[in-house]
Image (cartoon, rainbow, N blue to C red; front, side, top):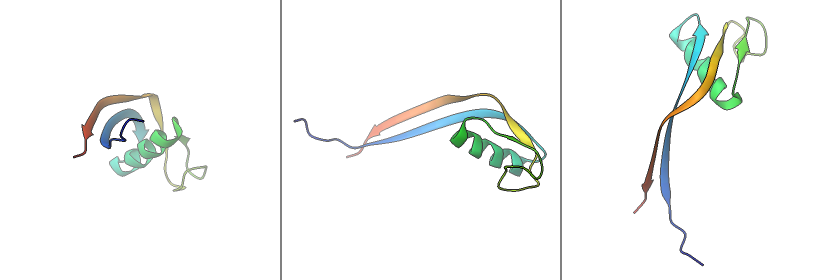
Length: 70
């Protein structure tokens, strides 16, 4: 059986969002990365009932780095 090797993998993803502030955009994007799509209106499923906004389009992987650990 081959020897197990260890790697560090870093991925950069992008998604467009609508939001009322940069902080809300970060929250919406983070939840979008987990769920694939989010659409929040104040008082609904969002973890913060004041957040309005949604993800637009698909999540895109823009960079992927793989480094072998020594």
